[in-house]
Length: 69
Image 1 (cartoon, rainbow, N blue to C red):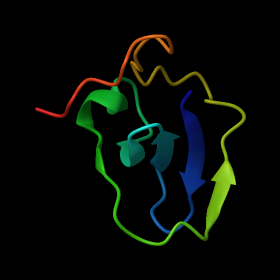
Image 2: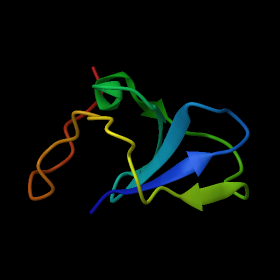
Image 3: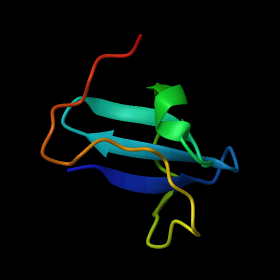
């Protein structure tokens, strides 16, 4: 399961947390494909409850997370 958080230190980016760790994801359509590993402090996070119409292009929740290119 992937949980999204608003990254208040860097607007228009979200932090995604899944079984593989934390990812920095641009908060725009297909941003999931541009994600990169997140390294930093995750103290200023708020759970995203409304994607605001953005389709991140995230994988099927049942499928394993593919490796980054």
